[in-house]
Image 1 (cartoon, rainbow, N blue to C red):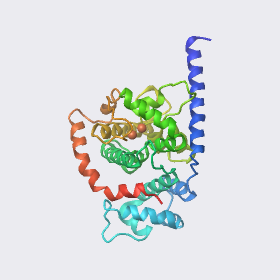
Image 2 (tube, rainbow, N blue to C red; image 1 turned 90 degrees about the vertical axis):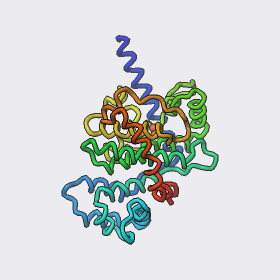
Image 3 (cartoon, protein in one colour; image 1 turned 120 degrees about the vertical axis):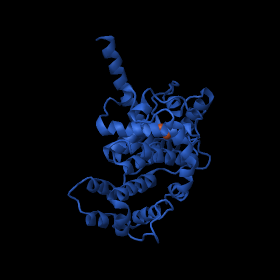
Image 4 (spheres, rainbow, N blue to C red; image 1 turned 30 degrees about the horizontal axis):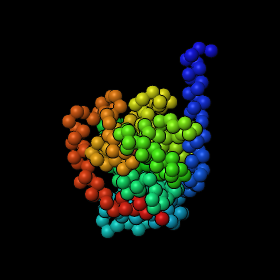
Length: 312
Ligand SMILES: [Fe+2]
Ligand SMILES: [Fe+2]
């Protein structure tokens, strides 16, 4: 066997062990499957033969999901005049695409474990980072031929692996956060650093395994599962618009941290991976422009952010 073959085999073993660890964390955090309504809505929304009435009645058949979705729709940002009290009216204002993205967002956020007081992960900082990433992903995504509402969802959900890891293994997660701060590296790099305690799974892997188990649409899986790796060699399995979506969210994640809206675990901003910003058509001076606009944008989404915090 050549040294290249040996290296490849050990990489496969390593990633199988990390995936098994990711699954172990998901099971330990008791992450449930998504409600059938959310999975079916995603399937119907991507089916050109599906009728709006069918999707409206499907979503309406789950009253607690519907109530939550309508709260998001009525949050200040969407600002539908006089508000909406039923799914049909929400669709007529926002369109099916936005409705199905909101259904997926609500379903995923409710399926996530709750961070306890004293958790090494600050839920407020994390959701603010997620929303900043979502707003930037939608903005940058307008330059690509991709559905921007899906990129918004991808940005919102990209770091859910952190919530699962912080709940399932608070000590291990706290160690990674301490490590990131002490060595001034990103949390992702700290998670991947080896410390001799057996296989580790970083938040991207944990999110990827969870997103696949939830049967989320492929571009969303890419945003969650490859937002750090898309521009590196780690994402060889990604092609076409899945890769583009992951790159857009990866760039948005970087710009959010650059603008001071990180997750609170690490203050390291570092450099974007080589060629990342160019690939998503963010040019030199634009980085500061996008970062400068962010605080005002976030302020307009305050009530939406509060609803993410409280998914009950
Ligand atoms: Fe991340
Ligand atoms: Fe992030």
